[in-house]
Amino acid sequence: MGSNERGKWWVSPSNYDEEVRGEFRFAPQIEILDTTLRDGEQQAGVVLNLKDKVEIAKKLDEVGVHRIEAGTPATSEEDAQAIKEIASLGLKAKIFCFCRAMPKDMELAKSLGVDGVICEIIGSEEMLKFGKRWTPEQAAAACVEATKAAHDMGLYVTLFPADGSRARLEYLIGFADKVSQEGHIDSLALVDTFGAFSPEGAASRIRKLKERFTSFSIEAHFHSDYDLGTASTIAALKEGASVAHVTVNGIGERAGSVGLEPLAVSLEALYGVKTGIKLEKLLELSELVAKLTNFPVAPNKPIVGNRLFGWSTGLPSSLWSNAKQEDPLIMLPYHYDLIGAKEPVLYLDKKSGKDNLKYWLTKTNLTVPEDKERDLLDLAKAKSLEVKRDLNETEFKELVKKIS
Image 1 (cartoon, rainbow, N blue to C red):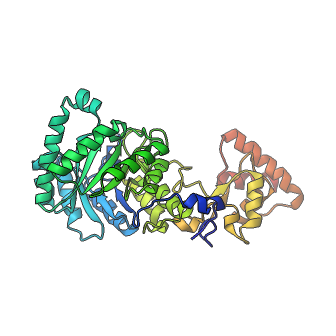
Image 2 (tube, helix red, strand yellow; image 1 turned 180 degrees about the vertical axis):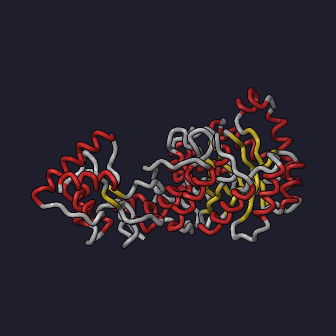
């Protein structure tokens, strides 16, 4: 796999320079934990019912997600039943649920048939003191009791210290050490609750956590408040974090979480790291989640926006028209087939040129005399300015009638 993976993508060869790749410390197998059904639903305005959650879980499994965080059972009876239903489906993915640091939450999780729990506790001293109004000793004691109970029940235990990215490293290490010694940790999530990591900061903290803890793995759960969630997650994975937490379409609290789609495609195309995610199914998964959450995707959203593959400006439209038969990747960073999208289209607006016009005449099966094409293009540009967007088919046909 390289910078020009035939028929799939064409990226900078510098990405694959030996001096660049020599710094990578990717885990042998990176797992994707999707938390659309929990963190994604925490996006203000998103509400999913049992049927929605089951449908999304099935699709996540079809796409190849390794772990599905199916929800928080303590939220409601319906959420608990949704988790139970998902856990009973026999999916390939491991099923997790989100729990407070309480033995009763672990007992509930066990009764629902999940494979593991994500045990949440406040992970920074300030939020613990001023938000939760707890002492570090109270937090540690709760986690020790809860994680031990979960382990004794045969559940996989991920400790989830919220806002751990902003905690003093010494405090976070001391806290995790106490819980692992007196309770149980199978993996530790480094949690960037407020998207406050730079990629370099994330890499540094992962590196130091891995140096300190060798008996359990480290996971990356980051948010995107500075629009760096994907970059910071990749930085964490490069330092050996073995699980990335994501959501479909990047939905989640405030600015959202790390999107499954850009992370999976970037890892494969830019870094040569296969995740096992079926990239060609990403678009249909995105569309399903957008429909069920009633939370639309921006048309230019990376990977899954519905206007990524197309041009309205004259020059790139002409370049595409000439290059597509030779190699579509001359004009694309990755092939539209890779994520299950359709062939690029040419739009028609005030920036368009002759190849846009030819495309639209062919599309509508219409003709005008060659000496009238410039007049038609001028009319199209004027109409675009009038409506302040690109033209639709009805508008174009009306303009052709004026010329004919």
